Amino acid sequence: MSSEQSTVLNCEQVSFAYGAVEVLSAISCEVAAGKILGLLGPNGSGKSTLMRLMSGVRVPRVGRVIYDGRDLRTHSRDELARAIAVVPQETAIELPFSVLEVVLMGRSPYLGKFGFESAHDLAVAQQAMEHTGVAGLATREVHALSGGERQRVILARALAQEPRVLLLDEPTAFLDIKHQVAVYDLMKQLSREQGLAVVAILHDLNLAALYCDRLMLLKAGHTFCQGTPEQVLTYANIKSVYETEVYIDLNDLTGKVQILPLDADTRRRLEREEPTRR
Amino acid sequence: MSSHLTKRKWLLVNGALGLGLVATILFCVTVGPESLSLSHALSTSSPGNTDSVILLRIRLPRVLLAAVIGGALGITGAALQALLHNPLACPHIIGVSGGAALCGIAALVFVGTVTTGLTGIFRISLISLAAFAGALGTTVLMYRTALTRGRLEPYALLLTGVVFNAFCGALIMLLNSVVDFYQSHSILFWLMGSLAAQDYATVGMVAVYVLVGAGWLIGQGRRLNLLSLGEEGAQQLGVNVEALRRGTFLASAFLVGAAVSVSGMIGFVGLIVPHLLRLLIGADHRLLLPASLFGGAIFLVWADTLARTIVSPTELPVGVVTAMCGGPFFLYLLRKTERRIFAS
Image (tube, rainbow over all chains, first blue to last red; front, side, top):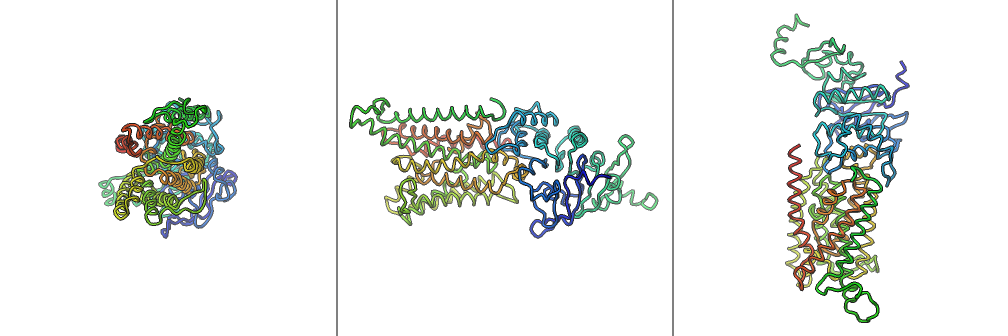
């Protein structure tokens, strides 16, 4: 495999603590061009913190994050902003910026101090808005949009940065199923066609199985396991990390793993039948 | 207008506002208890022309000072609103003016009118320095209080500002009750805000400070835009948020301190002006900041003209006029913002 060559971003044994509380310890992972890496784990397992280390907003206590062969800290702020884009869970914009203005903010790392956006910047922003389906909203004020529309505006802003790495922190948490699928379809398309490296935090294990090339399962700040969706999303792994029973199967249509939660009645029935079932 | 900022729009809006300011100044110097004509006052043929004395010695410095102070308050309001992610922020409401006034008054009472020995535009009195320190200290205090777990709570900020203003007011009243009549009069001037009786040297001094502070802020327009994506969002787009925050605080305190030290507390300019301009020209701070400088200047010149003519031959403190406009405006804004926050 030539995965070594296509690695854009990698974490080498990174640890991080907020004050005295260690939230990540010795995490290593590689983000490859053209691939989607999914970060999974229960609430508080350190996924968002790991993403902050990847974007350079936080600096690891121990270990290094390497982008393009060099420690993240040796890149200039604008260099990083042109290379790595982040879509947070939610963005509250209180001032009445228009959709186009917000998307154009993604061009900021390409502008000079007093610079105005060029025709090229506008074209990039326009294409980004078309990709996420918000081109028709360009003149609307962002704070008047629905949560789902606003999230697609923020995604367009990230794409306008023309990044090599796109970090998504549960980007579809507030979207309906149609827009969830649309966002991940777009991620898949961009990674395949433009070699974009994508890292996404997901809570939906089925979406993770469906779209991610590799998965990393975190538990209490440690890497529980990483690998292909089939390797990671097993009954034993999920039971151990999420501490809940699930039903796992291969989906006939997609050929991917599918995971269903089980309610209390079913779990109790399974417990009675345990020896014979598994 | 287009939905994003272009160079053409920038030049057009600032040009129009600049012309508007010049027209406002030219008109407002002719208005007053003695209505006078510019051409007569400026004709050199008649020596000892009283119109000329009124125009050049009384009205022009006052109108120019109103423009400078109004500009400072307008641009500071716009910058603080960007910094605090809150369209309701303004130096007066979050307590910065109150803190500046309290420290200025304390210096006046305890130290008196001691100067630093410098002259000309560097003629900074200890009172001005105290006002500046008060503005800076209050800004930092307000920010720290409203910051909970790294996030700014807009309503916590407003409440803290209200409480802090009341607290400053009480301390000022305390000082007022222990001083003599003359000092008491000066304290009243600080509380009500006044642009009267200033000479060109003072106007020039304040103008230099305001231009420096405003110039720095205008240079941060693009970065302040990014701040509305949240602090991490701005950081990820290449902004050194900590440096931007410190610089903006310092510049705001500098501008408010300079304004309060010569004209006392004039409220609401920083709230009304940026908000109205945003409705007209959009939220982009590259344009909004210089526009708020011009807009604040125009607004305060008109407000002061109203203050000195509406109950002629006496006059109102200009702070009364701006508060009359600003109070109801604030309530309207609060209602509007609240509806949006609770609807989402």
